[in-house]
Image 1: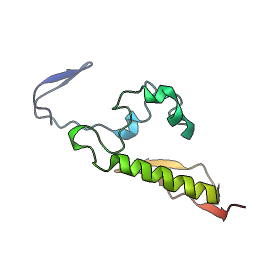
Image 2: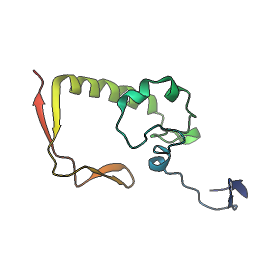
Image 3: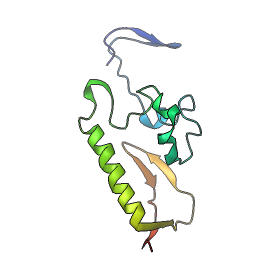
Image 4: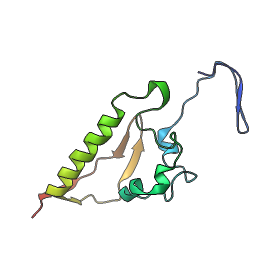
Length: 120
């Protein structure tokens, strides 16, 4: 909620206006991200990403209302995904390219059928 009239770029936001920020749009903003629509896990290891504005990526919100489990969740995801990827092979078996469904959380429209096999 805007506590006072404010100008953001060419837009006037008047006092008491509800303001929402879309992580889906910010996380795909080419001003921050090179090839934002490309799946590129290696981007997180670059110096360029380490220099980004702290509000360019905020999956757990930001500021005083940021999730207190943010760092733990990211570490936990890193460990779990590493272990799973080391032990299993994944193959997408859908009939068409997956389509993102950005609602309250980001999902894949109509699911994402996979064939999963134990790695050799």
